[in-house]
Amino acid sequence: MSQPILLLKPSWLAQLRDKHPGIAAEIDPALSESKWNLNVRSVGRGKSALRYLSAYVAKSAFSEKRLDGYDEQGRIRLWWTDSANGQRKLMTLEPVEFIRRWLLPQQ
Image (cartoon, rainbow, N blue to C red; front, top):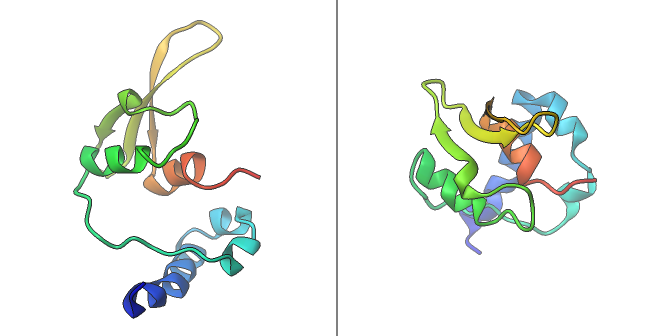
């Protein structure tokens, strides 16, 4: 792993804590100590980036066909089915909330 990528980890964590303190407070502190890295290569924008991320979501209720794209503010749109009446509905999430729900380990 290259030195610039190693240097990004503390910076990324600090930015997460500064910009999203509520979400950062919910993350297990042990994750800061564990060995992980950031993949900093570009994977495109919008739907192509969401497709790339969805490949890393293992055995969840999330699949690529649920993606509807993103809006003008960069929020992610995805479909979900209401279990009460079986209707499909469109949900809009901030990117950080999308990551929190589907990409971060659940406690």
